[in-house]
Length: 354
Image (cartoon, rainbow, N blue to C red; front, side, top):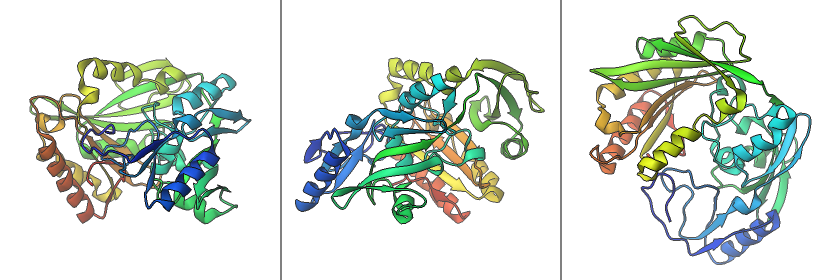
């Protein structure tokens, strides 16, 4: 069995497809009795085997479904994708405050990892916007929240399933805009890109580094909810989009990558959190040693300043034919991680640095 990363392979002793939280708890209890670990799996979008096991693999897609949508909340099974959540909430004019760029990941999966999106500079992570969770732990299902079993609530959000398996989540919702204005802001270098992200007032903001002749090109994307706002300074291009089209903007790109075979290639991804005052140096040092062959034909470099002032630097490599090997890309990832740690940073636990 493989995950999206395509680097690690593991064969589970058994695959269980529970249809209820109680069946998840029973499977965890049975696995423990046999001395096996039980690892939850949604759409398997991890990059270094985090959703794989030689024990019991729990396929949680059987827990998909949005059970309730209220005025400011929705209740969804852990195996529900964010696309399915949005399909249930958007007709009511509501949306989760933070969405991942790729909607075909599961609620339980991204909350277990943290879940970062372009609005995280305003709203934090997806895990920060959870109101309550049902968790299979110790052979039973427990409800937890900031006021009920808060230690369990804090442990499972970002816990990668190590402290209990999320079976259902109550998600906070906010009013969804009908349309957005997407603004492109070219930047001179990494310093300018970080400055633009920290100074620009926008509902969604992110940065991207792209290969160009003789080096790298830097670009910020600032998105304003509503299409009648004033574009930020430095904007050279704007596009008005329906909110759903913006939220689902990766769908045509994914379809193209699937057709080209790139989606199925190994993805040695490195994602590190950096102190804002040291991010520029780490980014520049990393880019200085990189080539397009080290990134891959469909690789992407993202820079995202978060609500805390921390910067998420993501080098999302693809081991395309004719480019660097998986081993070479993993070695480069470890150099990036060492550089990040020296700067006081750390890894995002869903990457491929092991």
